[in-house]
Image (cartoon, rainbow, N blue to C red; front, top):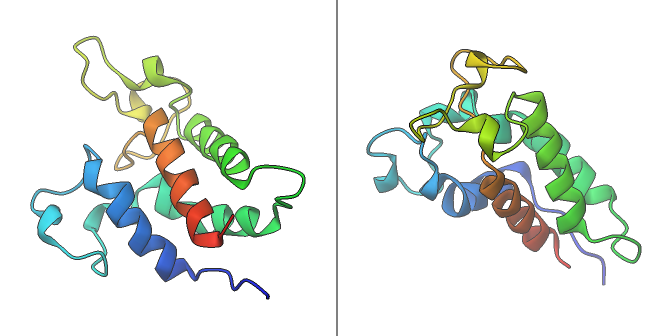
Length: 133
């Protein structure tokens, strides 16, 4: 039986439930929105900006050779590096508050929230599950 890859809309809905629900950068009141409703932050979120590439890479993984979830975690780590948050310490300021990537090495867009390592795993796991093991 041939497995059909999830659409970008299916992935977005799953990420809104699994990742956005606990994101410290989600807009106020967005927790009341359903998973079919885009959040205003998605236009600047590195996860949603790179979702077509994440999906394409996930589709290309030969699961007989590599774990799709592990490959996607690596992709998410690279996205985090590109957007200025190489590790958890890079993303947290002196008072423990999230540091904006434009305030340090790696740059970043002014409206772009930083990614956290815990989000890497959540994204990788959600995409992997939708694509099937």
